[in-house]
View (spheres, rainbow, N blue to C red):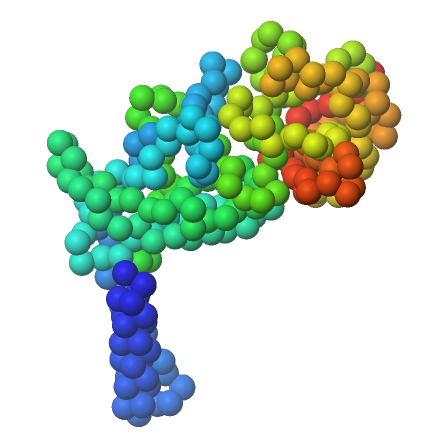
Length: 275
């Protein structure tokens, strides 16, 4: 497919060159028209896991117990067009794009396209996915697996060398409901999917940023309840105003001479109440 793309690009440039060269007015550049849109919708067909507190995890990585299959269902697929999948970061705004190739026609008559998730190598962040129909210059958001209803999904690349965990807040040690806010007093709880042990040999800290990702301060992890970490809200003394802040877990090697390397989690925005 990549060879076809290059061939197609060369032809488009050649056509544009000929049009400009033959024009009586050298200031006029005529660009070949975009072809009509074919696809009308696309959705994921699998996932890694989902949580009762309202979100779906989709991991692009060969981690333990990852049942995600890198396929997309496309409605009104055009066999003469080229397609790709693009993911866009929620916080760092990085974008990564990988080719989609034909896989099969399913029992509903829709087309299944597949991609190689190992080609992304996306830095730690949460991502949303889009399908690109190149000839029509169309970009559509890829919706969640149909049986997930209205749950939002979060994509992250667990194969990236700096990936630590996908971070989420929870109400307390046993309640996985995501709180609407936390207080600068008492205990705060963060959790992550129970897949992969990426924190071995690392000392973890909670890093807090403003909404422009300027670092404000760091807080020590004070406890661990399985896949739940805790920290003291009173340690957020560098926050003086109630509002939204961005949180991340960062891990640095406990032994600087070890073979472990620094890792970081995805980001999460949380409202902080200053009492």
